[in-house]
Length: 376
Image 1: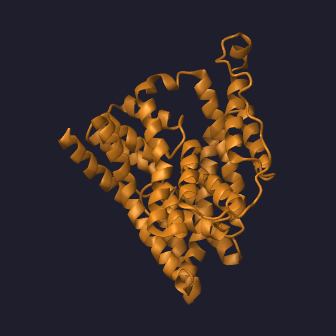
Image 2: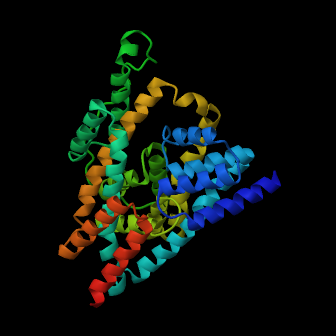
Image 3: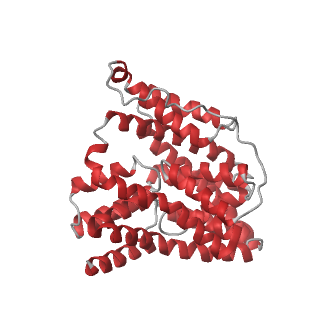
């Protein structure tokens, strides 16, 4: 067991320190490392775990790391794999957050972010386009996306939108089973959409920071970019602890570092309460993933076979894309502020869609363009 734990620590620390490119790239690297090279799991087992991560909330690539750690060394492996995969990025983002707090108002740093922000929006829109081709499977998932997009702008709670969209599509897709008496007793499960969330200013506290990120980690479905919707709803709108500019800066910092995008939570925690806030935010958003993976790993073979679970997942995925589109529109107003930023965003989108270029190079190019605009 000790040998396996040492092996887990080494390989996931290396992946966490070098895995650029987002969840899809991370999972591709894991496939190469653990299926083809180390043969920890079979091709089919790996695919089953990928499917399972889409059925539970949380960051997909991080949960894949946790799954693989559990397969290799049970619960100790699960904890170690997750911590080692996220750890390097957390340290790097904390250092960047320190530099941001200390130097964020200096001209060079401001102009660097000036070029990076439109690239981030282009990357999000590219992900939205790519994911949309898979997530919108027909009339009802397309309708769910559009309804959520509209309801978000009248400030309906994003968690209720996710649950409502998932349950609605699940019931509609399985209506024949439901009326035939073969449903799982879902009558009355659709939640009321509730009252609009109003902007407030709540005094900061570490316990509230922890609970807010714990809640986000418990309900966040979809890609890392969907995290934007939850972060904005809680930290910009509901609590009033961040501005839109600080939020997009946090996402940018999560993008320019290796590892999962969830380390944007580390950046936000540091902005609000230094090292203690960074550590607490990271731990809180990760706790649900450890729990969900530990519970679901033994039942993976049965999850996707259920038409009800599959229908719920289809609805949640479409709903998450609606949230992602709405937040992208809002954040674009703080990123596309003049003609140069529009040009940077358009060029980034072209290279992303035409050549499938790694997002890391796009971000580097945006940073250089921003600095060039400052100095020249």
